[in-house]
Image 1 (cartoon, rainbow, N blue to C red):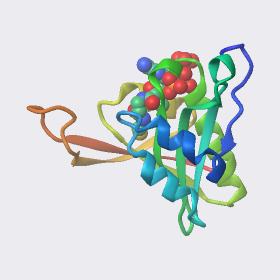
Image 2: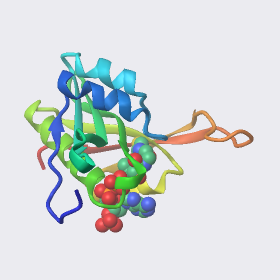
Image 3: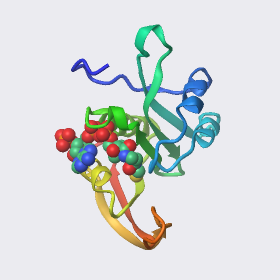
Image 4: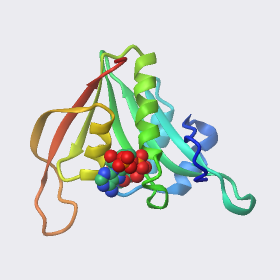
Length: 162
Ligand SMILES: CC(C)(COP(=O)(O)OP(=O)(O)OC[C@H]1O[C@@H](n2cnc3c(N)ncnc32)[C@H](O)[C@@H]1OP(=O)(O)O)[C@@H](O)C(=O)NCCC(=O)NCCS
């Protein structure tokens, strides 16, 4: 699938629900497969995904997804995850770009998100896409591993349509 072409991001629906369910959860992405399938059915929710061609005639599999919610004035990224095998190839970048485009079609004013303060990869991705840090919620996230403490959330946003 890594042929130098830009990723094709699609809006996932009932047809891809099986791939989402069998793909399971992507660690650290903020959503489990069942929640994504539910989000696909809501009027103000959208699940964007990149499907990777299956090897040897197998059906396509989910490489990454982004769950976007429409709020009254803004839109919010609820979850983002790229499967470990597909990371570092521009899939996350393509998904966030597609979320910005979807928010623009909704005429949202801003695109919002929350991210663990220690998630350097995700923060770098968001900053590269024009997000800035608006604030910090102390101890917002539960510990990632036993023995570690709760983690702060960074609140980030960017204007839509700029
Ligand atoms: C964060 C995540 C979505 C990035 O997806 P990805 O497809 O690997 O990202 P891309 O290949 O599109 O990278 C785009 C940019 O993100 C940043 N980035 C991605 N991975 C990075 C890493 N490991 N370290 C530092 N920066 C990184 C870089 O700025 C990169 O641009 P560059 O390659 O030109 O340097 C992925 O690592 C992931 O699913 N992590 C686990 C779940 C998660 O943290 N979700 C975010 C919750 S808010």
